[in-house]
Amino acid sequence: MQSIYFMCDGTVTINSTNTQLSIALSQKTSELLQPLLEIYGGNIYIDRGSSQSFKWYITKKEDILNLINYFKKYPSRSAKKNRLHLIPKYYELKDLKAHKALPGTFLGKSWKYFNNKWFKYEDLN
Image 1: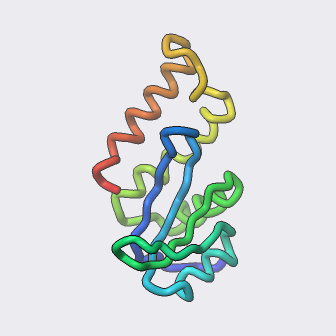
Image 2 (image 1 turned 45 degrees about the vertical axis):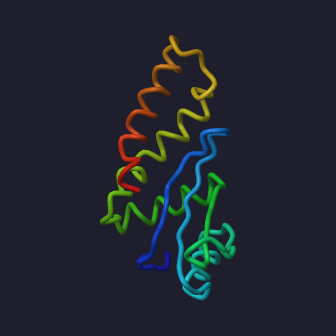
Image 3 (image 1 turned 90 degrees about the vertical axis):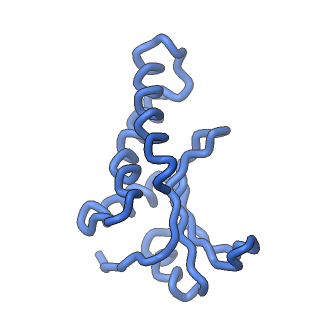
């Protein structure tokens, strides 16, 4: 596996509407994001917001888990590491459909516990 040093703005989020997990990184030029696209998949687009930057993002489970393997070998030094460590648990619970479970059930409680841990790091991202 090729080593890439990440030095950019990034987010690790779960969409509250459809519970889709995504990871996104921003840079001023697309050339710095191109190796990520080639190694981990995803997409690059122009963010025409205030920063006028390029964003690379991934949402596919296989791509994200492949990226997580990178971070196991080369740990993040930012607060985002907390959410990166929770991603395998997210997929485990999502596969069990815990996000759709009734609140009082074991799966519903497991999803709530996971969300509490996930959103504990909201201010850190």
